[in-house]
Image (spheres, one colour):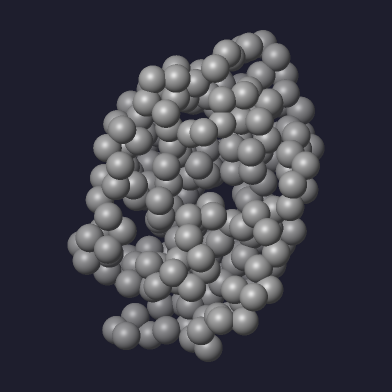
Length: 229
């Protein structure tokens, strides 16, 4: 798994500009450092099946960053606080929330992952990047929810599980009126047919991902459950 630093940095800048994401040199350096460390760790610990630099750029990095504007749209609509706490369920090697934390410093991210080799990497890279808005949680989602019931403004997941299961995992964590951000790699008409009546889709954004020729969308779903349910 090779990593061409100069080429990668140039491609990242291009992708950020295509996504219309403002950034400074510090954020760009953090993203490049994250990626260099990810490549090192992946060659030893198998954090991801993706080992090609270009595939990684599109399928991991740009795929993660493409959800920034849809999330900010919910803030603009008053559905999410400006300093929201978001739990990333089954975060794996850090996608999307470790990257979101770099470019969304006003948000607080809880990266929930039960596999130790992955949380070891997340703790390592959190320290290297000095990200104070990241909390690595080495627990099963159910146990985290028992400790922090109805404490999150939102949850997010990138193709972690079927939508109905993601909602089931999310509900015990969410505040009343909280949001569920479901990142999907296929049209989910059938899954949406089974959406509980206690939840409503407020946005369904199809995403155009730089360096990735594949379907992507993000659903913003609001939980209408009372927090004591």
